Length: 570
Image 1 (cartoon, one colour):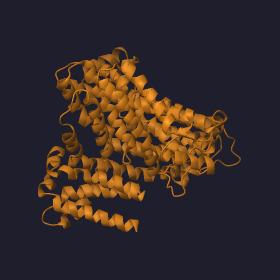
Image 2: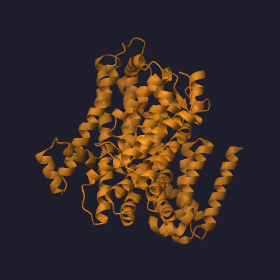
Image 3: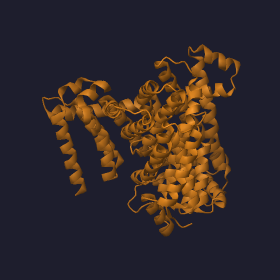
Image 4: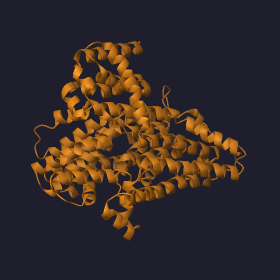
């Protein structure tokens, strides 16, 4: 019955598009022009994808229909619906091909596959079980196991993808044993991925954020130290900071609310880490790999491969970025690397200039080779079985690769339709000075949620926010506050969105049902975002010093958890 209603609803949507779309749109590939032509209809693809994801719990189908609805809009001709359907399908296939052809996207897909192979090897060698047993000695309760997960998330600060794909598989056996729901594990992973990578002094995010800041200031004729501005925005990144503290509060107080409380109570009382109808985003091929009874468990079978992954990633970020800078034409940066190659500034610039997706794939591949070598050397697996185990791990990531490709395709279609441009035009009129940071935060959240990309949202809003803030109030701290609102608003929306790649990877890393992860996380993220506005951007916009505003926000988070949360048994 539900399937019939969904099919009928989708056909109605297609009919509405067919009647409303002008022929002009089929020939336009520019977002700004299409935003003018389509107007409110630019919201159809993300709305279709998000609504169907919640209704069907089938992410692949929802994303596919979301992409197709956008392609239909771009290809439709007044001559008839036929061209819209046929041309839309052809455009959809081309969007998927273009997504995979992008070197960054290809690197992320290969990284996911390679890390899947690595985790399978670590599991088969007994490394995952050994480290789980070792951590379980310290993580003896649901509280301590969650805290260890949170701490690991902070330690892998340099990249959000590496965070999601590393912490989950390591901590999943521990939290399962301690009766912590997969939904809570996915939330802790997701909330310590982009939020920490976005404010880390050295990470794969820094160069992009600093570049946007530099371009924005140049647009208003101000020459400034963009990295210095980035550092100054950190106290104003209220959502990033408060969500990290929010996790600690829920762990320490053992209080949950909303759908997360239901999930935690289910796991504590029944031992079921997943709902009976859940469809975890990891196949049994990977999660079911257990070492043979004859294998002597050793934590080094996990520490060495995972350590290789982290060290190789760090070295790769530096040398990949170093070579990119040295091959460029920025004389100042080249001189910096020649004169002080190991200085903090040089390392920061090298990290920022690196191709993170390629580096992480290379690091995962090296770590997989090391793991295979260890398995063969210790006679745990013959070379043939080691390779087969690695391939089995890769197979478990196939569904993740499909979802990522569809999510990227949807992002491309949305960009071509001009969805973000339309939202900016509609929501950015008549901005009072003290409300501007809050409105920018909300606008960034909406765009990021609808498009599933924080990077794209930052790129859209930053060139608008800096000139607008400077025009309303040229005070340096006011402009910096608005820059922080852009960066953290984009992360909040991305954090909530079911079509975000980091949300998808967090579900995969924790082997959680993706829609269950989104549902349970949404209540928490919205709560923290509301506090970020009411106890962050509003008082800061009214002139209260950030050194007072930030502690006020932390207190508000603790009070919210205490009042809204219900006790979960230890």
